[in-house]
Image (cartoon, rainbow, N blue to C red; front, side):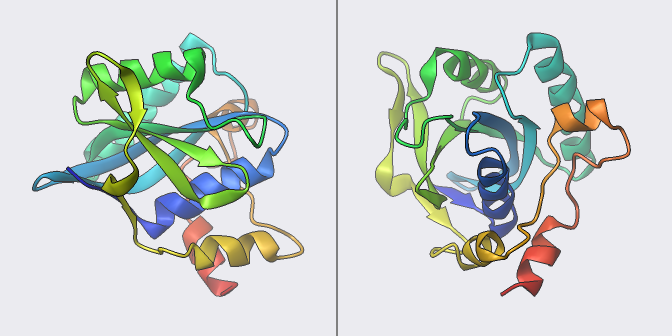
Length: 187
């Protein structure tokens, strides 16, 4: 089973992590099953700290409604830890990943590397071992992460809005519809 990450999802995850380099960020991944694999088409930032259960539940409901409208579903989650060298899922995020996995048995967890934001690690759940890394089962629409890297190199990097931020200021759109288009303009 292979997982393919769209350019849009890759850019949103990377920008979310870069925007809060000193904090952990978490989001949900939306996509579809394609044959034996999963195509991850969108990433929705949820929070720039460990989310509370009510925040995560409300965000999940809204993201699921948005996904269903596009004939997609929640297929995983992503996290970038506060420490650049921390590439683990950790107990809090493992619980979130378990909740997502309970709803979608082929779900995944992506852990972003703070030094290489364009190429997160893929974790899949093993019944006996828990969440384990699967190196050769992930592919990226933009293998080199060119669009993300150019967006990060800009003097005024693009900003993404996570769900937590949207709740504080409802005029901010947590769906981040223009992020990829704006990032492509910088390439």
